[in-house]
Each structure stands twice: as C-alpha cells, then as structure tokens.
Amino acid sequence: MMRLVDTHCHLDFDQLSDNLDEHIREAARYGITQFVVPGITLTQSKALLDFKRRVPECRIGFGLHPYFLDLGSEGDMEELWIRAQQHRGHLSAVGECGIDAQCDHLALQQKLFLEHIKLANTLALPLIVHHRQSHHLIAQAFKSVKPQFGGVIHAFSGSIQQAQYYIERGFKLGIGGTITYPRAQKTHAVVKALPLSSFVLETDAPSMPLNGFQGQPNLPKRLHQVFEHFCQLRSEPKQMIAEQLYSSSCALFSI
Ligand SMILES: [Zn+2]
Image (cartoon, rainbow, N blue to C red; front, top):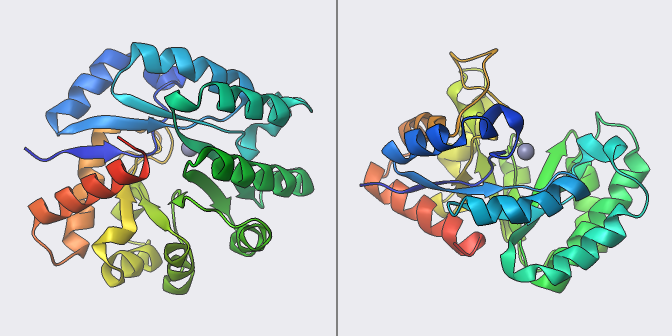
C-alpha cells in the first residue's frame, strides 16, 4: 500500500478537530497516515504540544502566521523562542511563517520572518514558509539570514525560475489542491519540469478546497486526489512517485 504524508494540514482547526477521528480514519484508507500541523499563533503553538500527545499521527511546528498577527501581542516572538527551545524534541519545523503582501503590518512580518529563520537555524529545523505576492521579500530575507536546514515553500505557485531559486537553497515545493484546477498552468509546468525530489504534497485543510469541492471545507483525505493529479503531470510510475514523496517528506520533517 502507498504511504502519503500531508505536509501541511491544520488538523487542530475547529472545522477538522470536531470530527478528528473520522478524518484521520478516512485519510488512512488512502494511505495518508502522517500529518504536519503548523503553528500559527503563540497560544495555538503551545496548544499543539498537547494536540501532538493526543494525535500520534501528527508532527508539529511552532510559528506566527502573517494572517494572525493581530491575535498576538508584542512579546510573542520572544516567548515562542523560549518555548521552542524548551520543547525542541517535540518539534519538526519552525512555521508557518513568512510574508504575505496582502496582509497588514508588512514591516513587522519581515522582521518576524527573519526571527523565524534564526530560530530554525538555532534549532536545526526546517521552515514552513507562507508567501503571497512576496517572492522578492522572501528572497531579501534569505539574503540577510540564510536558512540552513531548508524547509517547504507552502502552496508554491510561482515560476520555474522561482522554484529553482528555492530548490537551490534546500527547500521543497509544497504542492496542493491548486493543481486540480485547469487554470493552474504555471504550477503544472513546474511540477512537470523539475526533479521529483523537489516536491512534497499538502492539503492545507480545511483551506484551499480542490476543484469540484469549492465552498466546502477541505479534508485531509483529499490529499489522495492531489496525488492522483500530481501523477498525471509526471512520467514516472505511481509507486515510484509515492515512494519519493514519502521519503522527501520524512527526511524533511524527521518523521
Ligand atoms: Zn496553512
């Protein structure tokens, strides 16, 4: 049986956690047995420690997501550092962090992103990077603090050149439900063009519904459909694709 890792799934969000056992059971039917659950705020990151104890299928990250900065307060990054160092053994990543040009507080986002990169370097962890219309700002941050343990560019949707930029710096491209839409031609081209080892798969559930499921919460089991679409864009046999994705995901997040 094929094994798949959902490398970006918000299992702790109410929309999923209300029926968590069912979602995990349904995903397991498709061989999806491991999940990476990102941190988004300080409070939620701390709560993830307990979540991980209850849900052995998941790995977790600590981070401050650009969307949710208004929910936090000024000392959060400092406390995140302390907590992350205390609980290093429970962490598989730093993030979800990054820069989103459509969110407020751009200067603060940039400052916090640098702090996340430093934290990841200090703890020898990969980064889960959120980006939107911000490739140039991410590149600027990488120039000022070089990430030493790679990570994943979550929901990658850029060009082949941008993809290569990240791959050269030790990052994987997180490919999700976007590829199920015919309009995602740029991402299709990237999936076709680059080595299989460049990619990991993700749902971002409950966000980013697949084509045909618009308006509904996304579900972890749909990683299976992302995988099927991914395979259609590649020339390798399915089993080989599954094995490479699995080993890339495990290596990245120490699964
Ligand atoms: Zn996310």
